[in-house]
Image (tube, rainbow, N blue to C red):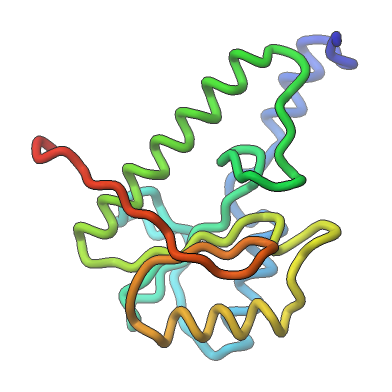
Amino acid sequence: MADVHDKATRSKNMRAIGTRDTAIEKRLATLLTECGFTWTAQEKTLPGRPDFALHDYRCVIFTHGCFWHHHDCYLFKVPATRTAFWLAKIAGNVERDKRDVARLHQLGWRVLIIWECALRGREKLSDRGLNERLEEWICAGEGSAQIGTQGMSQLAITSLPDTM
């Protein structure tokens, strides 16, 4: 299937996709503030530049777009055009995510990934449900996790080679 836009239009549209202050980040910021947590946005000093760092709890939160980070949910669809290019790009994002999570873990930080599908779309979790899961994970003080439309689950941490 051919792209519905010419190359220049597609390029312009892709450049317009923001990397910070996205709608899902804004929603999560509101939820964290409502729960009474203090946080730093886009923490540059930490691997992967987490969307939110809660220094008092030594934990970080990433909001991952389901397409860009290849989440196995209804929001991820394999592109019909330039499929090999996009799958390689997304695979690179996934590998970088694993490396960043492993580095954070080595530095003693807990990691929570909140998937886009949990924050928006037809199967999103309610604010109350998200608040409960956020508070539970942040205050528990142990383990790394992820939140999707099915709720919270443990996050697998891969080890880094000793050379890093």
